[in-house]
Amino acid sequence: MTMTTDTAAQNFVIAPPAVSSVAIAGTEARFPIRRIFCVGRNYAAHAREMGKDPDRDPPFFFTKPADSVVDNGAAVPYPPLTRNFHYEIELVLAIGKGGFNIPASKALDHVYGYAVGIDLTRRDLQLAARDAGRPWDWGKAFDLSAPCAPLHRAAEIGHPQKGRIWLAVNGQVKQDADIADLIWNVPEIVSILSEAVELKPGDLVYTGTPAGVGAIVAGDKVTGGIDGLGDIEITIAPPRG
Image 1 (cartoon, rainbow, N blue to C red):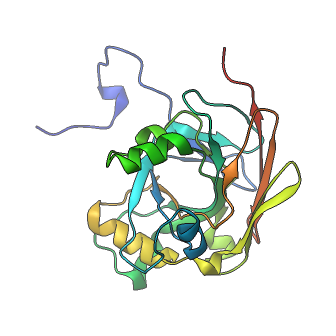
Image 2 (cartoon, one colour):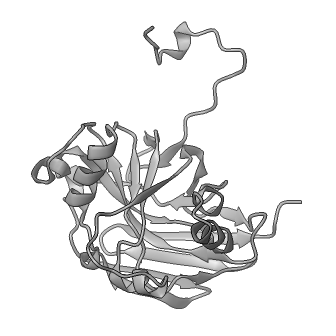
């Protein structure tokens, strides 16, 4: 049986959900999001602060829902079930051309653009799951957990290989590194990920965070940026009632 993605040809019993998307710098157009993949522990110093060996073992991935993306400037309510809510600044890449078993030498041909993102994490839930050998979903894949600034098109800016990546809470810098310090670089990430799944246009990849992660609370203003990709800003709002 062949499935169609043409919603006009379907008879759904409920209204299909809206398409999640991220802004594109310099245009009113938006980039539709299909899936979000995240690379775990991709900076050596962060691996050490999480109590892990930063050896160059094959990278591992986890996912977030497409609708967890939050636009730049948003207020993000402090999430439920956690008492240890963390920020993680990240370089984000967007897949514009799909592929399976993509060689690293061709991987950049599949990247539409780049952005600054924040991987928000319920750290206590993540660590409890990790220690119990369970999936990380409740610690990582929750509502509004993937703020993302506008994408910058690779056709215009190229493919950044170095540049400062930083995050501050209430003006105090907490993370400060260089994307050149990625253990697995962008072509390698795309290539290795494509060995496990067929990448599709609309996929986002959060590439990992440097050292300096920490807790945030309601009322905090979180800012960050990557050289050449601009800044991101969110405010942590009180929990939902």
